[in-house]
Length: 304
View 1 (cartoon, rainbow, N blue to C red):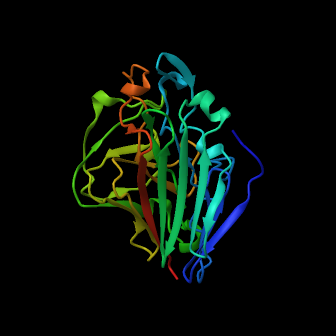
View 2 (cartoon, rainbow, N blue to C red):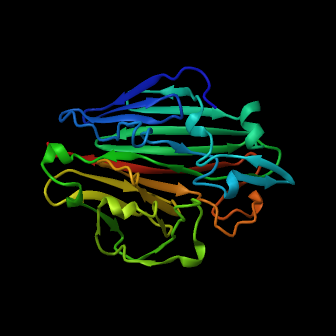
């Protein structure tokens, strides 16, 4: 659903310069003003060809890449269509920008709801806020998932450190339910979820993602997931705010020096899903005319 020619827009303050594309309202670059360090993965097509896609109206994969709604079958690929759609800029200032996507005849072929999706970015010092505002324009209930998928560069070459020197730390320091995902199907292996030791550090390695993403259930309060190393002041923090799930992922078996920390308000189908959108686990239900607000924040810290 690539519509039109994409354009890049920039917001900037005295610490960060952020470039965002109209295609998918997707972050292309986050650079330190003083360090000139590129924090975002640069979409190497040989590894993973995206930077930080917006996932809507589903997160993850559907069983058989399809669902039924009110007796009709619709086909929809992994993570939905918004990441490939052309957004318009609704408003912009030096440190803030809001993108807008509305339903169209094309979107309604795969998702039979009328909607407005706004993706808003705000800069405050070294913090970048990404907000999702979904308004239901349908004459009835709207069902959807939404999420972020930012990929972060790990400065392995710059810092003379190895990828394995990095680790994930979570706050609050507590155990969380881990939901395994089938590498073959991309669906949740719901029966084998377990309590994971996220109250301790999680060492980063390529093999960490051999079974696909690490998916954790989150409680309602703020959760912070950090990627950092003891060998440098470099670290990135992601505050998931009210997200019920977070995914941690990097491509495997192809590998590179990046990692994604993904706050989600939605999740892939369970392997036992019946295919009905009305029954899909983890979805948001929005009444006619109502608006849904969610989002997350990222702080960037470099060596310089």
